[in-house]
Image 1: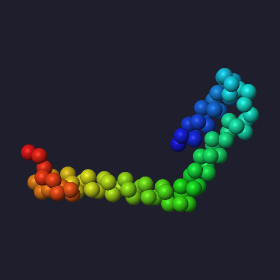
Image 2: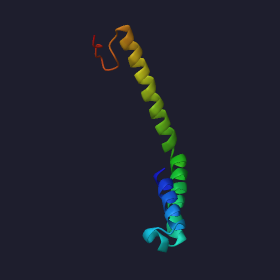
Image 3: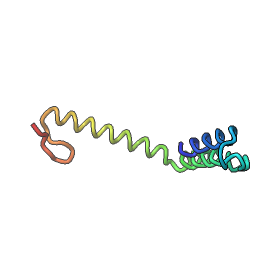
Image 4: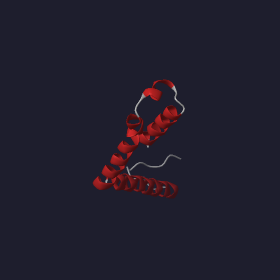
Length: 84
């Protein structure tokens, strides 16, 4: 996402000829988009994206379990009693 934002900012500055970006080559201005494509390709190929999704789902699941156990008055996943 950072590469996309940098690319959009660069294109905007180049198009409106703002600052030193106006003198840069279009190859330099558009390079963050190429880096974003490379990042997404690597993230999908390596399983990084899927791992992050699974970690987020597991954290939500554990928080839900802990909240339900707390509501029932049982100790949480770390063995702590809920505060009353």
